[in-house]
Image 1 (cartoon, helix red, strand yellow):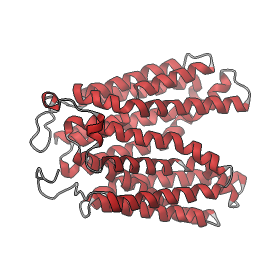
Image 2 (cartoon, rainbow, N blue to C red):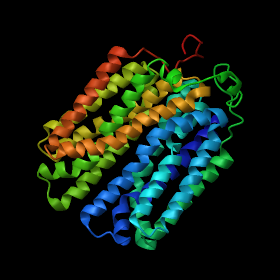
Image 3 (cartoon, rainbow, N blue to C red):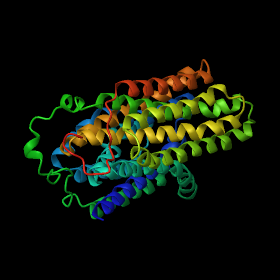
Length: 411
């Protein structure tokens, strides 16, 4: 089917792009050493600033790029973003000073945002009853790519060196760009529920503002949901290896145990992304998000109460499944209430919530971890319970995968 071809193009490009990004970013501290930065504190500072500046800037500009995509089309905007990644990644191979990496990463943040555009395109191409499947598929690619990227990157860096690895990363984005350019057929899209093609509604949009997008049913609440689950998801990175050591694991086994737990979280998160469609076929988005929040909170509770790493092995799958299912349900619920002609702006705002969680979580949890590592997981559990409770109390019930064609009233 035509929509499946478009979904494959978006998913493959997302997987390749997210994999390429993580080929080199985890090894950025080593690259700063090669550039002549010798003090460990300076390396940590430059690494933190360079890794944080991209999501921070992208959080600000993603809604603007999404709104522009509503006007000129999604395909050209995702191509614009991929071209910028090709140029910036290749340029990083030529830098000679630490500040140049930071400047390029800032520039990358300004032109990034194709992750949100990919989710928007997934929502656009799929029939309404397959929207959760399409969004979950792209989110799975966004999870699995970063999971295997560092492994491939380590091999590439060993073979060709860190500087040349940036060229390899740039080539990944070239492949993603070619896939979107040749396989994604934007002009063949026919919008659902009686709308015309994606480009034709421009005459009817009028003065669409971000305030009008925020006014859509449940939308502000869904931004909070996306922020909360991203915050919890990213909180593990700064503290989990330290927590594993605190629980009594030998220093030589901490890396492998941490790697296993991170892999379990990523794998079960991907399963949750796909499981969401089956859940939404049986219950409302409100029930799915609230239930997933409770499941994730129970998984986090095992971290709070853990006396050994064996307990973490039991709780991590619950945490991953809950986060995966809830995030897909949130984007699907948003896609169900936002008209296609302003979906880019809407998903851009959702992406801002996610990126803020991505940027703030390591900082806040790192600082809290200096007082108590266990307190980080207490905070995570409180956030999940609060998010689930607010959704249960405030969210208007929406069935996003109806068995029959939806009516105007259902939207």
